[in-house]
Each structure stands twice: as structure tokens, then as C-alpha cells.
Image (tube, rainbow, N blue to C red; front, side):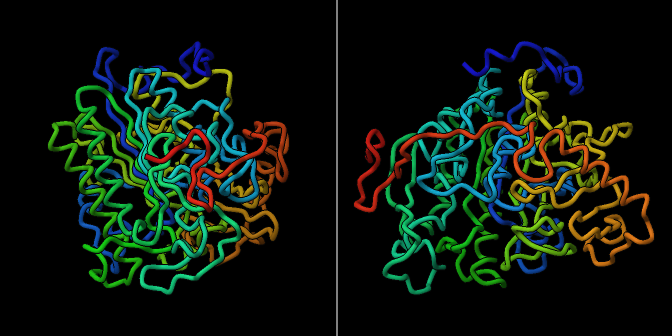
Length: 468
């Protein structure tokens, strides 16, 4: 058992400000795929209508300096493990179908730690941390899972996964990728075709609301990871053609509807004051998105590639209508939830995240969670920041993120002391994660021999994963 190593509390309950005998709170993390920073109303969107997220922000707290990773798999690894992605998933880009590598089964996930605290743990949606049996959510602490093992564009083109709704579907293509399987736990439910993509948001929402209802009498952790709004764009029929922003806006607005359904479910069951909900995006938006005021998009270490919209909601616990600009990141979610649950992080494993409760609750005397942040693209450290300055290492470009969040004016020549300080932080990384390649602080990937597709081109599932 991986959790036998949890022998000492490194984040005791006393740090949370809750009484030791207080009921354990519920947790919901809603993770959107490829959502841009300014694609929703609370962050300035005028294109997409997001009334439910607008209300969530009015009732909660925006985090305006929250980081994911440049792309999907690394960001999700950080969420699950509390670590910089490179520490636990040292890969150059993302994981692909029928891959021999994934998040190591030896890693201890947030689901596993919460499960050890008596939580019901459920996942709905996109996993993308390995599609072999050893890597699936049900082997990483989740009691249940309904969703896709990776992105909704990973499959053969003839299935409609390489084209948006309404576009001609190619007769072949896809780089040899196997068909996209919709999974329930470790059973293939169906092969996902174009018509099925249109139903994903609604089906995920129904599953999430059902999980809340089923587990309303006990503490629960729900991880809702939408495939929306990742390309290809497939908004549901009720939302298609309703926005001012084409298919992309339609899907953003359907995603907002889903958030509203989840929050309303919590209210209806009397769970709103007992539940922390965190809304995030995994990485920066694509060419469909608006990432203002930042430069760059998904795949880059510019702010537009890694700084995400993030909203925390817990009526009565998180101050309403507030914002905080402290440096926060996806890897902070594990230690925050574990601390609030009264659990403990694995003492024998280094993690990079911090308990964000002082930031979320608005404790005025709270020290910043992080004084610096490392921008990795795959295995390469490309940039470093502190509370004010950001240095792009290759070109030596320095930006003042307080006054120039769009990274437009290089001020390196005028601030050599800031350049030197940030280079020192980068150099210190060599003895841990490494500035390029796998440093001594990176941990091994999970690896299997003879990987097989969960669903073959002939429509037959992998042995042991029979459809029903």
C-alpha cells in the first residue's frame, strides 16, 4: 500500500483554522481544458456569457496569479501530486494513446490521501496521465471514474475527432491513433464518434451531480475535468449557435452551465457551506481563446501560456467578491485539500506545493505561498519569476509583471540586480529538478511493457476491458 508511508502530519489541521472535531469539508475541483484567462466574465470576457461563473466569483475569491503548465498532462500531474510536473512526469510534451509511460503508480495522489481520510473519491472527465491499466484513475485513488483517458482530439480522423462540429469528417487519418474510448471505471462504454462529442459536457454534468447526491451524507472529493473547451469544438445542441463567439463561445457557455448545475446541486442538498469548490483551467488558451492582458498561448511559458483563471468558492469561509494576486499553482491544491481534511502529505516524498488556505480565506497576516515560480516547458526551465520580476533565461529578457503583465518591455539592462537574483534561483534548480533534462530530484515515470490500446480499430476493447 502506498499510503503506509503516511506516518507523520506535515500539514496539521491546526494550520487550517478549523477545530479538530469539525466535520470534514467536501471538495470539488472543476478543471477546464484549454480555457483562456479572459474567456469568462470574471476575468473580463465580453464575448462569452458566463453567468454562473460570474456569480461564483461574486460569492468567492479570484486568484489572479494562478499557474498551470504549458500543456495538459504536466498540469494534471501537478494537480494530482502537489509537485512541479517535471518532478513526477518528466516528459517533453504530453502523453499519447497506447503509451508505455504514465504517472507512476508509486506516486501518492490527492485522491489517495483523501480516501485514507474516509472520503468518497470520484472522477468525471479527462484523465490524461496514462492510458494503460496501471495508470488509470481507479488505480490512483478514485473509487469511480467516468470519462476519457486523454484529450478529445486523440483518435482516428474518420471518427470526427480531428474536425469541429459541422466540418467535413475525413475518411482516414489520425496518425494511427486508436479509437477514443469512453470509460466507466475500467470498462469501455463506447467508441466516441462526432455525435458523442456533442454530449460530453451534459453527460459529465449528470455524472457529477449524481455523485454529489449519492455521497451527500459523507465527505467527498469530486474531480470534474471537462474535455471542453479543447479542440475539436463540439458544443451541445442546446447551446450551439447561441453565443456571439461561434462554436468556441457556445462551448464556453455550456461549460458555464455545467458549473452552475454543480453549484446548484450543492445548494439543493444543503452542502454549500460544507464544500470548497475550486474552478481552474489546465493551461493557457489556444488561438480560439482570449488570454488578455497576457502575451502568448497554450504551449508557451509566456504568461498567456501558463497563467489561468481560478476561482475559489466556499460560502461563509471564503470572503465573497474578493481577489488575491499571490503566486499560486496547480501543485498547491493537494496540500491545501489535505490540510483542510486533517490528513497529511507523504513525509518521505518532496512536494513543491503549499497550503493555500491563508490565501483563500483572506488572512491579512499570511505570508505569500511562494516567493518564486519556475516555468518549465517539458524538461527545460525557460523562465523564473519572483513577486515582481520575470526572467526569460535563453534571451535574458526581464519583465516587470506588476506593471507589464503582457511582457512587452524588456527592462533587463536597467535592472541587473533583478536579473542576477533570478538567475541564482534558476541555477539552484540544477541540483534538484535540473535546468534541462531530468535532474536528481525528478522521480521515475511509470512504465509498462507491451502497451495496448484500450479500444482497437476493430472496435474490440483490450482484454479485460470488455464493453457493456
